Image (tube, rainbow, N blue to C red; front, side, top):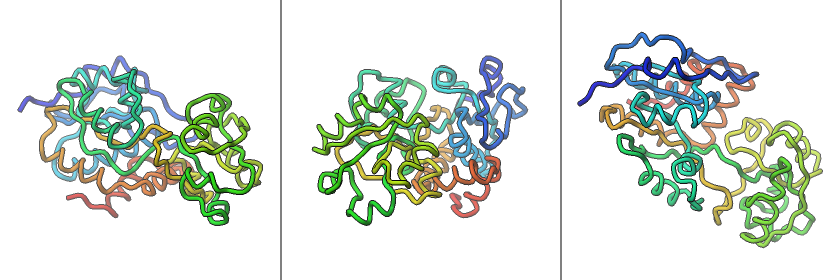
Length: 302
């Protein structure tokens, strides 16, 4: 098996982006690598949630005695995918739908299994798509628990039988996007009005839900607010939102032992787990290393 390459070849060309208000990065991608040439280079986006998952991979591999080199906080896909494709990164936590759209901009697939199968086929030579996780980080419609229980709403389809007017909140561009009011009507026969709230499903949106000013809102499925504000993510049987499951992308050089470990992590990581990890980062302000260590202590993968 070909030796794994360290991060040195690409690290100087990448910009470190640190998200304000989130946990501090555990490594500096601009620093010279200290691991041997056999090291498995684990990368992450400049996104606290993604870094936590990358740290879980890293610690689990190290526990198995495999050398690891961290290359975290290296930007978004335009920055890291070329290095991944060049074999300079060996393992990266990704998201099925957005990565498929990056590799195949013409795709119209949205449902989980279809997106995953297409992603496997779209992966460039030298890379393989490992098992996708049940955990997701994607746009979704959410309602309050009170609303869900009062009207028996657990799926977007259930909204059609709600006997009160419905108002959807989201960033202003959501008014004309396929997963806005037009998509709801076409896919589910549900009519809603739209209120723009420009905080990406943040505190103002959550407050509007809690106050009853809106009945549903577009919020990421891994948002800490799902847990802290007791929100209900509605099922999407028609695939209105493009599936975005966590999925490891690996170099063909990744040892079979490492593949088995990472696939076990994917199987164990649930949607609720991902939300809880993000709560610990955003609300408790814990670092990725501590969050990852605690999760692995509760979910041993060896």
